[in-house]
Image (tube, rainbow, N blue to C red; front, side, top):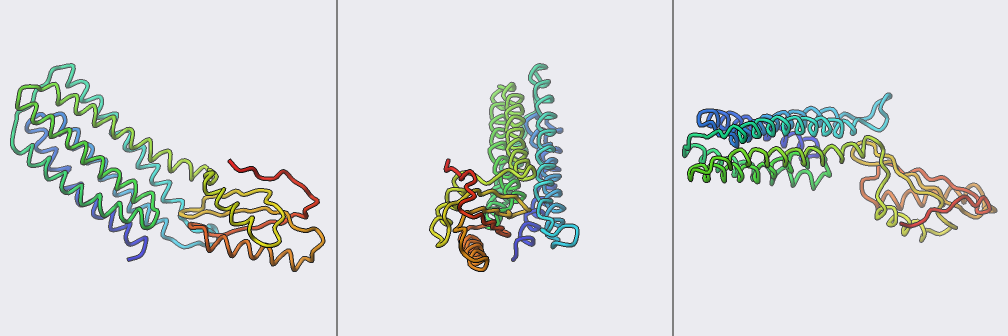
Length: 296
């Protein structure tokens, strides 16, 4: 199964599983007036939206390059991840406000074993969804799949809070229900912010990190003909990035020899560094002496 089919499966499983959990949680939550279960249900509503955005984002990003988009449509994955993060923040705000009102009003709920059954079923389903999405995200370096995996993982912890509020409610400690809802809201907001930051960095063409830059420097410095490295920078293009390397070489060699050095740099980097779509190499004569790149 290729990258796009795997991510599409993550989305379809997420949509199906979350719709089932959404209906079950809200039915039981409203029947018992459990704010934690209702908050959990609203979170599942956000999960349905997130999985749907994953499906659309993956569909668009899978399109090959064309005349208007020579490097493909890969950034669509990050645009839709950004949308998912914003939806999570909105859901978090709604849950936080509802739970805070319930806590201040001293609301109580009707204990039912159905609450425990739904919470337990949620944790099992979400664990299975997490395993699949996590494996796909790690295998294909997909932010959409990783975002879904983190969402499923978070839901396991959040539902455990819901389960705690149910048990404490049975013991008469109803205020725990409102507190659990608030904690769920804060956790969702944290996840949304983390996904937002990851997508934003790619969309704003943030450069590669220092560790990867140093790895590239180590490789290029060993290539015959390279006097010194002047600059290394990258531009994200969808799932991969365009790497731009500027080096200085002997000013007295032929154009052909200079081209061979540049071609060698390109081939070696594309072979040894992952997630490179293309390497562009620019050569300067050594006597040009621009500012040399510094390790960090």
